[in-house]
Length: 177
Image (cartoon, rainbow, N blue to C red):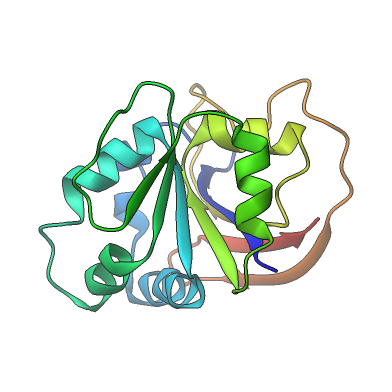
């Protein structure tokens, strides 16, 4: 059985919106290695439509070890409006999302990795589909923007299973549901 692992880049005040505008200054070799290690452990990727569109525009043309792994993993995108995709090994989930995700989880394998995809992740929180959170907390305050944990999310007890601080001040916290 696979687990769903949600990985997010967050500011200290919990903002996850538009990380391309604030997160890149923190990327360094040790953080990059950590992210690649997580990708290597995964055997599928799951995205909401907006994140998928950004990834599909960026990754297929890249040529390196991370891109090879990323582009060759099965990818699932949840979207009611997307009708086709040219990105290698991509499948569109249009309906019965919770049931389809439960089916994916029950397949043999290790983990389904989710990056970004705010609306999808919040829906998965509501239906208890997330097994693990991997939160990269960046030492910055943004003051505004969409937050991962909004008012009204279900009550949930989490267990801290790993923490690490990088030399750039980013802390990664891994919680098991």
